[in-house]
Image 1 (cartoon, one colour):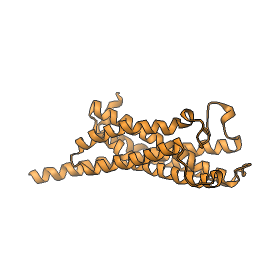
Image 2 (cartoon, one colour):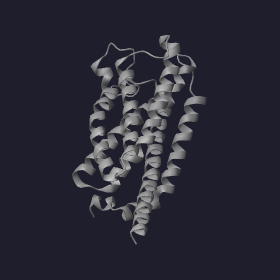
Image 3 (spheres, helix red, strand yellow):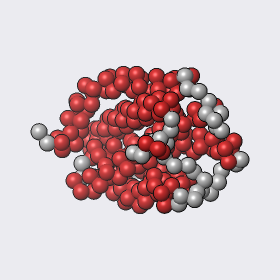
Image 4 (spheres, helix red, strand yellow):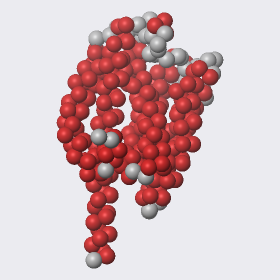
Length: 242
C-alpha cells in the first residue's frame, strides 16, 4: 500500500472518519490534564513568580505556530510536485489554525514580557520574525480568498509558503543566530542543563503533546470540510452545465 493512496479524496475521507473520534479523545486526555497540572499543581518560580505558568500555553502555541507553517510548506511542495488536491487543501486548512496559534503566542509573550522586561513589546529578532510570520499567515489566507480558480490559488499560495518558511525558521532558530536578544533560550532542549526544572518540565511536555494533537485534530477536521466544499462546488458546476 502506498502512502499516496490517501491523497485520493474518497480514501482520505474514509480513513480519517474512522480515527477522528480517537484523535479527539487523545487530545482531551492530554491537553486538559497538561494545562491543569501546570496551572494548579506547579509552584511559583524564583524571580518569575506565578507568571512562569504562562509557559504551558506560550511554549506549545509558539511551537505549533512554527511547525504549522512547516507542515504547510511540505503539503505545498507535494501539491507543486504531484498535484494532489488533498495536500493543497490540507495546507489551506492549517493556515487559520497556525494563525491562531501565532496570535496566542504573541499575546502570551507580551503578557510574559511586560513584568519580565518592563515592556509589552521589544524589537527582539525572535519576536520580530514571529510578527512577520503572523503577517505571512494573513497574506496566505487572503491570497486563497482573492483568487477564484482553486488550482491557481494553490500554486500561488505554495510559492508564498516557500518564501514565508524563511521567517518560520528564523522564529525557531533566532536565539541561536542572535544570542544577545532579550528572548531566553529553549525551554526544552537536548542539553539537560538548559531544561526547565522537572516540576515544570513534565506538565509542559504533556501540554505540548496536547497542543500537537489539537493541531492535528483541527487540521484534519478543516481539511475534511474543504474536501466537502470542493465536492459541492463541483456538483453545482455540473448542474449549471446540465
